[in-house]
Length: 251
Length: 76
Image (cartoon, rainbow over all chains, first blue to last red):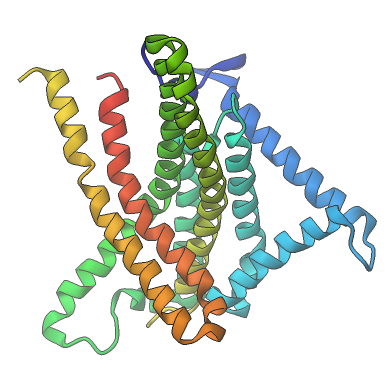
């Protein structure tokens, strides 16, 4: 018996819209789950603020808690001026969080387990920081590459490292989310596959012994639940930190 | 050496990197716990930093696990 934990990441076209050159433009299972995540977020946020009571109900509390959570994160890391970027960071956080949480449900598709999706989001943040930083500070923005108080003879080396680390930000930003989701889901499927492997190869004893990997799968799912939320939070907080560089350059 | 054997050995070597992430996560939680025991009132305020440090450190271990998993499961 062979485990195929990569199969869950296959992108399958559901129906084709048209062609551009040799490329097929199709609605895939990936885009279907993107629509689903956006619909879920819209239901939560629009439904949450539709009633607007002084004492919030469940729905309204969820909407308010998610708002306050992101807002306090921005205020503490990027300052009051960072609240300008609240819509961007809130959308990023909610999209990643909801799509990660949807992805934990068995037989669903995890959008953020594809590097192209996370890379697009990370590049969006990277260019937002770059363009806003130059727009707001002009050439002073490039002071983030020149830390103050560094001796002049070591400055070229430090600048080189700073520029390199700035350019590598979108890479680490996207790979962190993508790799966490990919590795987590593969680990889940591998441990779930152990149950079937034991049962098929050892018969009745195997099925009884399979309780242990099954319990581990349940525990791993709980961990994945934490990781799904945490990675969305980390993505949002890193976005805040990068934006902080654009708003307040120069250390 | 056969390519299949080389892939398996490579996956094993790639997993060594997770040891470093394990040390890092241990350092983070250990220091947080030590600080929290000394000054429990300040502990709650640093929880966000703890989680952030954990996630950034853990990601490096995940990177090496990712390489191992890609070597094991993705056909060349």
